[in-house]
Image (tube, rainbow, N blue to C red; front, side, top):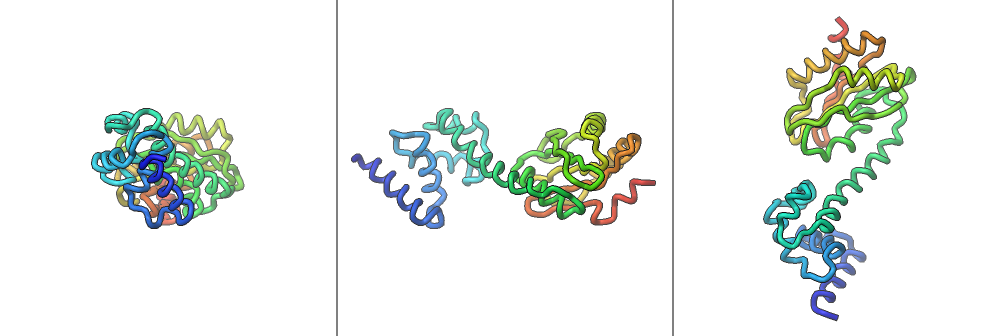
Length: 228
């Protein structure tokens, strides 16, 4: 057994017995890299990743191109790093999908948060609901920059009609910001309300997610303002 193999075994066994609570970020990343880089010392590579991206969160948010610019990281290691947050997201979305009916902003936020809180750019989603407020589908409408996203009203209406929706909930995220509605958010909500009203579909809410916080226009009583 080589020195590196002995170190890998000790680190793996420590994790299996005690979890990651006693691990530093460097050790956790080093352990992860064992499974993509089998015959090299991954400690300096983990150091290089943290120096480049600052934190584990920064490492997991990096693109394949950015990761592969770090010496020692190839496509296999980049794929493994990128896979971790996506698996976590998929798991959380699966739990959220157990919410079958949405009757208020809290229900909507619980359903939407796992889909949005890991995003680094603004993402627009729409939920289609039937007449009993049961979820029919959740569709991504658009992606934008870190502080803006365009809603395609024609596509929104087409999706709502295709799903035979009675109600629609719009949602987007404010990455790293406040869930407070901006002037642009207000304008989008007004346009969406009118566009859906023409085809006899009601815009029930517009949810803004910012990390663990959210704002519901409907819960705040704002949706009634768009009916005039």
